[in-house]
Length: 165
Image 1: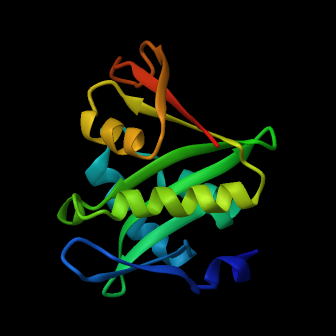
Image 2 (image 1 turned 60 degrees about the vertical axis):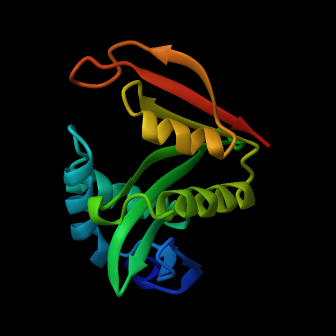
Image 3 (image 1 turned 180 degrees about the horizontal axis):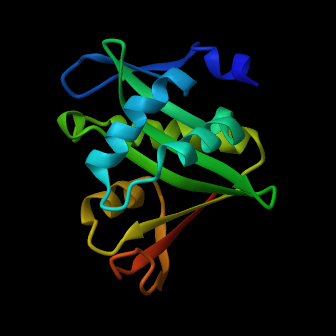
């Protein structure tokens, strides 16, 4: 299993807004420490490192990282549910690299991988207050479907958003 997580072949190289290159590839175990740092910088209730490790093993084909100058600057975690639902579990970009198109590129690539595995519908949850993320998801074809009250530990609700291919 560890051998699978050590492969670091690039999946895609993209140009971000400042014309610099970012490589999108599958996560490795060595990436998890910086993924955890980005997680803590991005969320009020970050996933524990042990959970990120488990997700990396269980979803290696759909746990992707964005790498700039050999440093992880963002990640996305997806999983396939019920053979047709691609669930975007989490996505974050380091604060210094936000607004450059990395989040959108990660979303596009993880959806490609989930489609390859059979996804026909995509689902994610987003804080009601996270308007920036909502606009990104809407630009990719996601639509708000319903609200779950008290979804987050601080009591904030989330929108559940879906995209159908």
